[in-house]
Amino acid sequence: MVKITDVARHAGVSPSTVSYVLSGKRSISAETRSRVEESIRELGYRPHAGARALASNRSNVLALVIPLRAGIHVPVVMQFAVSVVTTARRHDHDVLLLTQEEGEEGLRRVAGSALVDALIVMDVQMHDARIPLLRTLGRPAVLIGFPEEPTGLTCIDLDFRAAGEVCVDHLAELGHRCVGLIGSPPEVYERETGFAQRTADGFMVAARRYGLTSTVHPCEATAEAAQAMVATLLDEHPDLTGVVVHNEPIARPIVEAFRRAGRRVPEDLSVVAICPDELAEHAELPLTSVAIPAEEVGYRAVELLMEKLEGNDVPAATLLPPRLTRRASTAARAGGD
Image (cartoon, rainbow, N blue to C red; front, top):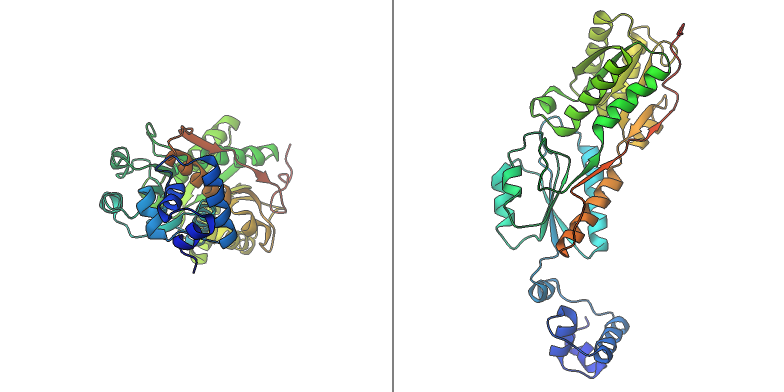
């Protein structure tokens, strides 16, 4: 393994000069710096992680805080995590994944140590108990999600309120007059999780704007719950012809449940899902959907954090506009005007 002394010998300088080039702690002439950097490249030298940390006063580690609470769909959460990890590696940073539900205590423990330089926080609630602490930690942080009061924070996410509206826009344009939202599991709403609450708000705002009959129902993430939900919806609203599903595990079972209830999709009933594109594309009946851009959100969250670590100003709020892709699960309302 190439050592710092090897680089120094190759470049014709002292080991301390190589250290200063790496750390930037002392001014080194451009000619000497260039010679050292060329030797580093030629020899393939990589500083030891511990030495880098000592030299820069950084750990080169980011914390990704994802409490795996009830009602969370882990496969989608892991898409965000993979994007964060791969982007962090491009910046020569590792990621410490924190999945335990520790709330404020977990943040305080990690931020109070030398383990991480900065934090990315997920599963943000409207009145998240972690927010006051995040404002005082003195460590750069980016939230994937928006609390009700985001002042003083850096947040990024899909614009879920707009996503709910876009789904209703699409159904209304197809002539549907009675629509329903089948949402996340009840506990997600009970925690006032931001993405679920904002989707429901956008759905209802758009439905009122068009004068549609509308209903919102949380649903457990099982095929049995999907079957029961369809029965409930059709009992309450026999004239239902449009549904938005914001609950990834039941996006496909919902279509089958409606078929079993005698409603063909899309001939009798249109279905729009809010879910990752690959889930919508590979369903037995490809689903019209608003994409959850996990890869882009994870990438941009890390980029924002890197800018903050360098002391640069970043936008306080980044809302990605929803993108609806029409597929086989939506059609004009039968007998519509």
